Image (cartoon, one colour):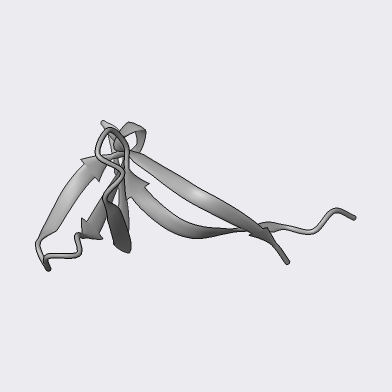
Length: 58
C-alpha cells in the first residue's frame, strides 16, 4: 500500500499567499473553503482558488 501524501501548506492560486483552512462547506454551487490569511482576515473561496505547496509522504 502506498503512503498517503500530506499537504504541507495551502495557498491561494494566483498570489501564492499561504492560508489556513478553517471550514469546508458544500452547497448547490459546489465545495467552498473558509480560510484565514496571514494578516488575520478570513475569506470564503471556491475550490478552484485553493492550491497547495509541497507534499510529505506519511
